[in-house]
Image (cartoon, rainbow, N blue to C red):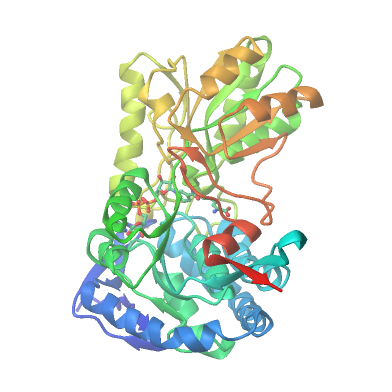
Length: 487
Ligand SMILES: NC(=O)c1ccc[n+]([C@@H]2O[C@H](COP(=O)([O-])OP(=O)(O)OC[C@H]3O[C@@H](n4cnc5c(N)ncnc54)[C@H](O)[C@@H]3O)[C@@H](O)[C@H]2O)c1
Ligand SMILES: N/C(=C/C=C\C=O)C(=O)O
């Protein structure tokens, strides 16, 4: 008799308890294409229960001192760190990324998120002014908003969920979080640590399910005055519509079409490997990934040769393989969407220099049905192409030449997104000048993804609304009041 597979069954975490669900959604291992987990298909009923728990917990949690809340966040960080390997293995199996990346980026950053906001919550200051001639003193105070609704995407599941939970509860809010239904496992694992960390029941509630069903129930609930969302623009538009009648506070961290601008005096020994990583890390499924590479004409052919050689060294493999640079994409549908862009590029007469349809992908038999593709480099493509305008969110990058600084700034800014950019040059005046002219919320020069959590993170134009960081998240997750005292 064939062995029956035991599926991992997740449960909502509400009011400090794991609760079974009436119905479930299949969740897949992207490296095999097999169902291995079932996620609650929650709806209004579960959101109502979570609101009740969050409401009940708010007075107690919000009245604790920042110091007391900070200690709880530090304990949670310690417990996550103790579970790092289990969490990394789970994140890799759930999302398709390599275990190495989960172990060295995703989970360490999740730990850091709690540690960072446990510290920053202790150091905020308020404002004060005096009107001596009127005998008045004015000062500001901040208070937690209440129940924070948090919705996170599937690409960096625990990393981005904790980037919202940590500042929200550090400021004294209670939260209802909805991770992506495609990557819910590490959020569920984290719930098992909350009680031991000293997080009171109802402070963190995690409700699993689809966006349209449970996500919209959360966004529409009148007792949830604030939504922090990370995901795609179409979803952000829907969330904005649903929340508008309630005048909810919104933070929207969306997509990007991030340029790398490489001048002729760039250090190619550093630029090439870093730009390969910025193009293909996490299968290109990072909102900050490079997907347009502008190279100054005088070094274009040399750069292209080096970049294609280095891309071919970027190994696609089974996520558990320590030598793999890249794992599987999140879903079959996403894989087909990414492949469709390459087909469109070919139809437009562009050249695919390596990767999809050019090189051979070798995988073990059990992974043949996984959602794998090779990192792909496209050139001879027009700025007007959809591959140069739309977010592909996969291991595909386009390389095109430019002549002048003015030209490349204009072309880099000619898309609806404005999230991140990299600028490569040894001329310090030029990197400052170009960085200031780029329509991006983040500009890295001669590097990529060095994150300063203190400073604002986020995009402009269609890349989002609002910023996240020490001060920015604190201000988002609190309401400010100005008090005047006449003495
Ligand atoms: N700016 C950033 O920091 C950042 C980070 C990661 C991903 N992203 C963007 O996210 C996108 C990919 O992630 P995705 O596919 O998970 O995005 P998505 O918008 O499909 O889903 C994001 C989250 O929203 C939920 N959701 C979907 N429809 C909803 C609705 N109608 N109401 C409420 N919630 C809903 C999903 O269940 C998921 O939890 C890309 O565009 C990427 O650039 C941005
Ligand atoms: N918010 C952040 C997002 C990073 C990558 C998104 O895909 C961060 O780094 O803080």
